[in-house]
Length: 193
Image 1: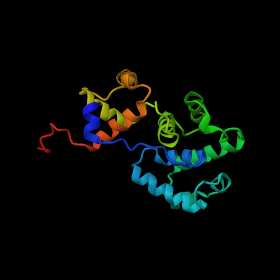
Image 2: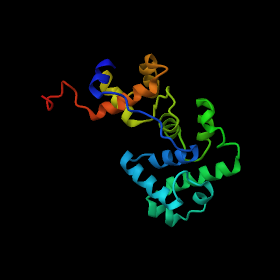
Image 3: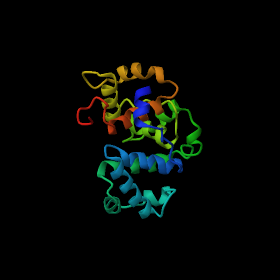
Image 4: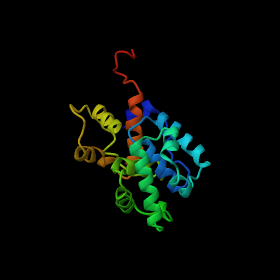
């Protein structure tokens, strides 16, 4: 990690400062697309609902056409509706959300249709700033670990857990460096010389 940190530079990882509901919606939008695309769609959605924080009632009333105009795909639209329905049916869900421990948050969030472990990991890391998250479902992290450790194949979750164990309780920072390393050229890269 020492060489990786020197190559990547200072860590700029920081949580987004917004309300939990807005952050969950942003994480849903980020599923399986680039960060730039997610930011663009999120901004259009925020504009459509009157800004941040996203008002639950206004978002729940959005039509499919309005979602589509914002660039929200059908599966993400269904997940957003599931989040709205869950928050409405469980009035205790949103209050105090940021104070819950990681395991309870995982359990509560993955119970919502369309939210899986990757979305929860992104919410914990980038929305809440939790320090010890290992995103075993993130493709970029897998590729970064493969390169960092010179593995012949992408690591499976159990191997990722083993490799990242020494970085506890700061695996989120380590994962940020691993992910950012994909933007860097190796000093042994012939194109760099």
